[in-house]
Length: 286
Image: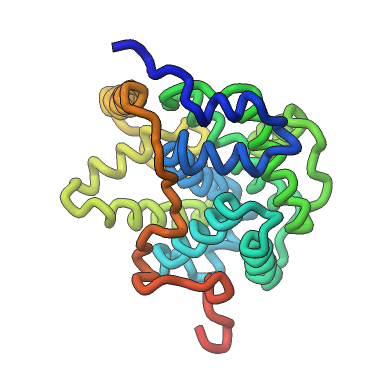
């Protein structure tokens, strides 16, 4: 069987402007073209932020990862998914950004760290796609990802966001070279997150699952987190499995119904959620 022909979603994207129509392109890619890949890549973007001690120490100090890692994951997932699925110009998207800003406002976060985290939302999905996507992103999609998160960053009050894709990518790489190094706080928040992911698959031996997660990381990140290097055979097997999945997806019919994460059942919100209630409780009632 040959590769899937260009979907109606891709044909629409090719007619759109990546800056003006960034919200529409981000929506199409997230809920139609690459729902699995977007979620997995942002999960590994989360790990990537733990490679910086400045970020991990703040996260570790909140106790959120040690005490309720799943709740924090669900909160982040629902806030970001609301922004992407509804758009930042919508009332719902604006509420999600306000909620995110209130949660972040409780802490002193350096602008350079904020900007790095924002950059991972742009570049980790692109890099994941280059490794494991069922098709390669076109230039409109790559640029739209940049323009989308640049605008979200502006509404978050992040300063000095580059105006060009290439400049933000350069910042992302230079930040990692300057800041990635091992710290116990890196390891603690990364282990808490890894254990949460492994709890989703109780039938998988934890040692195997731990190695599989590490197999999808580069050496710089593994070293910064203090994760052991998995056997090379396992790395090849995991990467081969992801590429096999991409090939299988390429043979499937195009997705007709959007996969909306805001409508999925979340473990810590079995009865649903409200944007205003997402996040940890205030310190006096925690």
